[in-house]
Structure formats: structure tokens, C-alpha cells
Image (cartoon, rainbow, N blue to C red; front, side, top):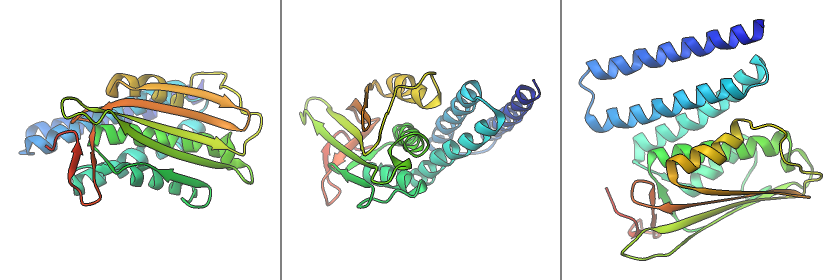
Length: 239
């Protein structure tokens, strides 16, 4: 009971801070573009706070996992404030590095250069963070020789319509991987948030040696675009 009360108090304080920040934005001369971006970020934070509290098994677990989730959102916010969008390859490699998983060692990344808009980047960062955390705590990164291959393609490069991005997270080197017994935060991100915000389809396969997660969504202009090595547009529309 004490743990539940402590969690509720923490959540109430965070919600109050969030409300004060919203009022501050409304009463200052913040440019419309920045205000819109900050409101999207705060909406994401509210969802993460609420879902983290609802799915946590203990106050300690709530605090530990919440910090990593908020950091993932903050990294994307800093990048988009600086560059306007986020490179998908960089987003994935940065999230893996937070868990001390280095590309070229335990991770292999491949795919075209894709730039994601802020909201989509925050959602994908959360998804990769949850997949990485799960692989460290329960999956292949907790075992010698455990690896992950992350590959993505964009199909349907048609000037009359958006392409479709398919990303596959494929773990190998695990043992006895089984589906979760409860719907935790990570599963809600993959099964609910990505679908609601990006129109994504997510397929999870719990293979004997690791998890295979496939995420597919339309690469419309509000989500992102493919660029060539020089930064020129190949798919989607520039803002």
C-alpha cells in the first residue's frame, strides 16, 4: 500500500510540473512551431508517465525504467531542436550505446538513410529503448554471444504516394525466449502507441534463440523521408 501511495505521489508531482510548463508556454511569446513541438513532447511525456505507473510492478522498477524512457525522449528532442529531424540509423545506434551495445560488435545495422520527424522519432526511440532494455534484462544481451541485427527497407517508392518502411529487429544467441506473461510498458509501446500514432503494424515472434520484431508503417511526410547520401529528397515531402 505504501509503495502504491508513493508512486501516486510521484506521478501527481510530475503531472503538476507538466501543467505548470503548459501554462508557461501559453503565457509567453513562444513561437508557434516551437510551442507545437513542445506540446507534442509533453503529450508524449504524459503518456509515458501514466503508462509507466500503470504497468510498474514496484516503485523501484517504476523509477528505474522511467528514467531511461524519459532520457530516450529527451535525446530525440535535443536532436530535433538542433537539426529538425533525426537519422534513423543514428537513433538506433545511440539507443543501443546507452545499453553499452556497440555496432560492429553485438549489433549490426543496415538500411537506407531515413530522416524522421520529431514525433515519429520519439516513438521509434521509445520502441528501440524497450527492445534494447528487454534484450539486456531478459534476452540475448544478457548472454555471451548474443547479438541483434536491425535492418530496414523502404518499398513502394512512388511519386504519387508514400513508401512503406519495414524495420526488423532480429535477435540471435539467446535461449528459451518466451512471450511475456503480462502486458508491460514495452508491449504497449509496440502494440498500441506505434499503431495509434504511426499506423504501424507490429509482428512479434519469440524464436528459440531470440525475439524477432517487425515494424511496418507508411513513410508519409509527417513521419519522415528517405534521403540520398548528399541529403537530397528521394521520398516524402520536405517541410
